[in-house]
Structure formats: C-alpha cells, structure tokens
Length: 161
View 1 (tube, rainbow, N blue to C red):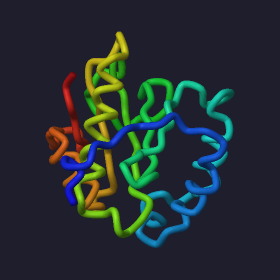
View 2 (cartoon, rainbow, N blue to C red):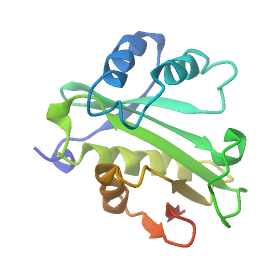
View 3 (cartoon, rainbow, N blue to C red):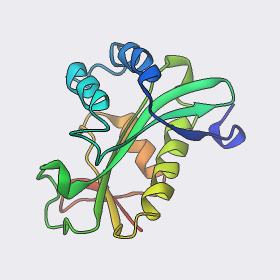
View 4 (cartoon, rainbow, N blue to C red):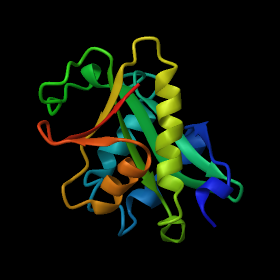
C-alpha cells in the first residue's frame, strides 16, 4: 500500500520513543547513513536542552510508528555544506524509515513533504536544503519525489518555500 493511500502524521518525539529509535539506528539498512548512533541518541535526549532548536518527530501511520525525522534552522547547526546558498531562512532535514517492510512504499517522500509543511510555518523559512550521501540513491529519489530539485552547483537538494 502506498503512503498516499495511508495518511501519515508526525508525532513529537518523546522519551518513550528512544528504545525504538535505538533499534532503528542499529538496522542494517540505516547504519550506513546514520554512522554515529550514540550522537543521534544524545541529541534526542537533549532535545529540551542543548538541542532544543531541532524539532524531532516520529513518523506514524495507521499501523504505528514508521520512522524518525527532524528539521532545524541550518545556520544553528554549524554545518557548512550550503555552498553559495544564503544561510538566512535556510532549514535542513533528516529522516529514516525504521522497518525494512516499510521501505519503497512512499512513506519517506510523504514524511519529507510533511516536514516541508511544518518548516513553511516558520516565519523566517525561505528554503530547505538536504545533502544525502552520493550513493544513498533511495534518499536522493525520496527528495526528488517530494518536490526537491538537485542544485548541481552546490551539490545539494533544494526546495524553495
């Protein structure tokens, strides 16, 4: 069943979600892209403190939790892969689908679109940039399916809001 047939929602991440995220970060299809699971877990544990500027969510479908996602104002991250894109008004996202049986069903694209809707509500939001690994073809296709374009000059995916 495609995600467009099954409405998804994003639920605010809570401490009760930590064991599930821990399990997902150990999954073989996730480990190549989320290479430091402890850093991700430390971040969600500090979501009301040091990392309060990051918005963490669990992707939920009609049968339960499907994945994890987050968005953040890019300029607060200290990252520097934006190329010549202005950092003012720029946001970025991260996402994963936790269970193998939920892959290739359109859930990731639907979740990325939902994140975009949330970011669009931020008063300073102008664009979203994402830079998945070059060999992460699934993530790159997810972004294209969600309406992003590939910015060749900067080597990243871009969605203007």
